[in-house]
Length: 413
Image 1: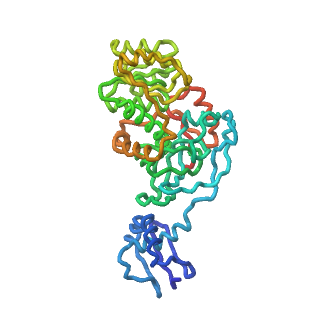
Image 2: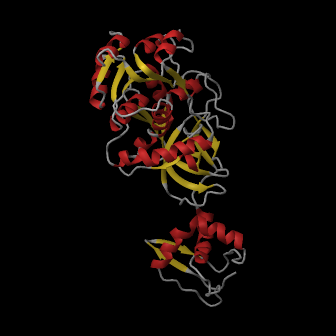
């Protein structure tokens, strides 16, 4: 107990200990250290600017550093942090059409070791969310049943071992699930700072697309400046980011789209050439655009019967990187062409990869891509923003295929 009171006034916010308020025992070094790490700098800055008055029987004034004061006030802050027990989320009980995406009540998740709790401002909508809703893409083991693979928001709680991150830091994060909710948990290694030049909705449109393109184009297909890339679905969320990253790293991009209007949009985004696959043979056109040589890389989200035509329009030593199979899981492969022309077929699914791998990719993106975003050289193309309760409408738009760029859900604002 402390007799008297300690007052701190900072920017009209008041923290006050009353006579009957309990305080921690500061001799407990573990508690002091943990609280200091979590709250130390923020409180220390406030203390440095304010006047403290300790009345009568005060605590020991001989503390060697200000972090002990930080612990004192952190205790009060922890007790008043505005994290509710429950939240609104989209968590369908059964597979089905968009109509199963209704708001329900769910407990706010608790961050585990190495994780943070994010108050979600916005969540990206992606094709895997649609597949999960339809029952074709179940969450990996340990992932929440709530859909949503990317969010932007504010860190409001830290899990064990997260000691170098400040509360109230604004981030965007890649998730294994859980994004369609007011709060979501993410491994700290899969969080990246929200670029100051982007809104929360724009930041929420980044992680799934940027991670996917970086891994499959620049790591697995080892893209090099001066090469040519064919991007299927050039006006999708993935496609629009792939076009911009290709341009930023010195690649010529050719895209396929489903209409002349989308071809025009892709050219405006930065594609060098656009092919309407409904009216033209993309393999013939891709070879024509490259003077008969063919393309070095293909980013394919179709699969199925695209495989033989993809092989036809590859240059020698060309690489195909498959990220989805919207056209089917089986296709005819000319192994003779693969042998003669030294072709590579690769593919990967990001969601089931371990946290360690995704954290490594996040580090690479922070060094190589985030500066481009801050410089205004890369920005997500936004299609439409829906409130969380209209997730069904967002899925209907994605399934209709009329969107250009990213569809995003606005959650907490």
